[in-house]
Length: 270
Image (cartoon, rainbow, N blue to C red; front, top):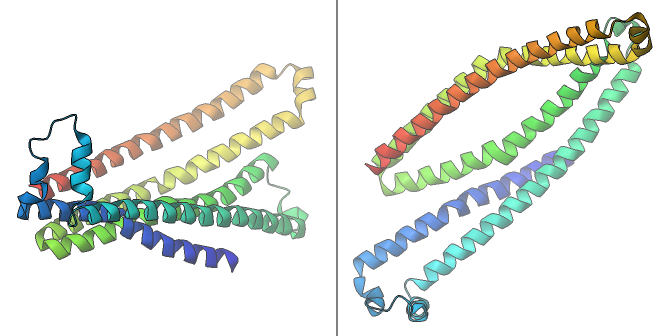
């Protein structure tokens, strides 16, 4: 319950962060519009010597139209950082609590499980799988609340401003977001099997290391050192090949997403 309440509060700060992140651009646009509509706002600074920056600062700070907007920009930047730090604090606090809870739950289940149910499991493989399950849960929470959801919040606010200002621009941005989402969905779907296979390979390699440590004296006495090194080298090579294959696919999908984003940028600016 405490974790859920922390995530709920973090979501509220996330929404505020997304709103504040868009304010500098919106306020700068208002400054440009004000100067374009009334060039005399900056007339006193035209012809000012390059070294006379104090005169320029006095003109801006004394301007009742422009200076309040600069003040709001500074305030929005500070407010965004406050929301960001608070959100990260709540997420990290919840993640560490969740990690502890998951570990205790795993220990409770292991102490209650029937011994014959785990007799056919290799100790190293089981330890790696248990560790991966906890690490994956924590990573999912952090990726969601530290990376994914904040970007979606900021994008949603930006889309709202875009549709409010120009429907065609908003529609173009929405189309780019949709294409990026489809590419990401395809990326996740295509890599699901590889990630599972990679985790299984790492679990097998971990089991091999544990077996090596448990039988270290026998391996040395029987002269099987080179054989064990070759066996572990083969496991490590299989992991390397699978992981590099995974990264190649990830790089290709990332390049495609960047291409979609660049195409959308050109379409919006054009």
